[in-house]
Length: 340
Image (cartoon, rainbow, N blue to C red; front, side, top):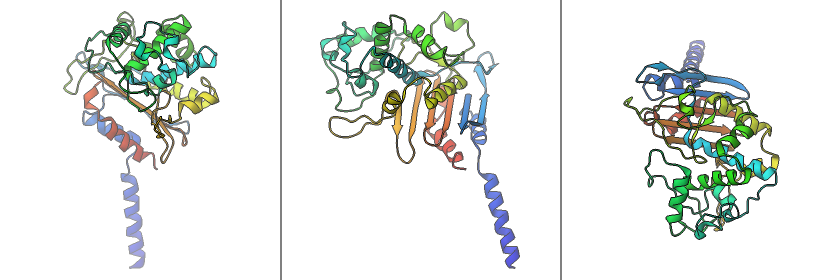
């Protein structure tokens, strides 16, 4: 009886272990249920656990994805903009405590004393245009013009955290002013080319006609493509492989020096003594592990860039069927597979 009992327990354990989902299983299940149309890359300790792209880059014409198909990454552009600012700082072209008015004279008086660091960490108080300006071809110039028409900040800079897409458009303007180059050329020369991110680019209507890119749709497979023209807060197309190249470069210190890496992943101290959870372009969590992550979403696109800095795990997801994808549910289930 004892031997039989032991054998049964062993069999149960084997069955339970075989039922534990892998990352590939989770991805396949979400795709089969119509919740994930796009690309997923999961890497742990430089070992690829899942690298797949599933579905259509264009539902109307039933065009399957190719590996080189680029997706609109929405707010995943913010870490890239932040890196651009850090590169300028490393070349002694700016200081994080510099006021914005030092570089952008046309900003209204109420915003001129905001610092670059406060823009990076969303503690500036600059009003967010999202949900207010609805022009489908909105430009940075239109956002800056709108900011001029505002009378005040939302709060005293440094006193609280409040996400502001407008703040990252101001950062893009600072990059252009200091470098003397357009933001797309600056990023191409200083980030995309050095890291061989060959399928990453800032969206323009002309360029969009010449590169393989995903078309945005909603959960009902109705067209919901991206057409906005703002940069700094968004505007970038990329592949999961390109973003993984960026992840590896940051981990190896190939772009950002040690001092900036510490600042990038630091939770800023607010004037009330509390810590915010947004560093230089990343949401930062330090319990129980040190996590740097960002999500993005606009029109028919959703994106996720999740990085466990301690255990060397990276998860990148890009999809062109935006509101079909429950990003936080997916992340929670994928994290369960990483515990194995």
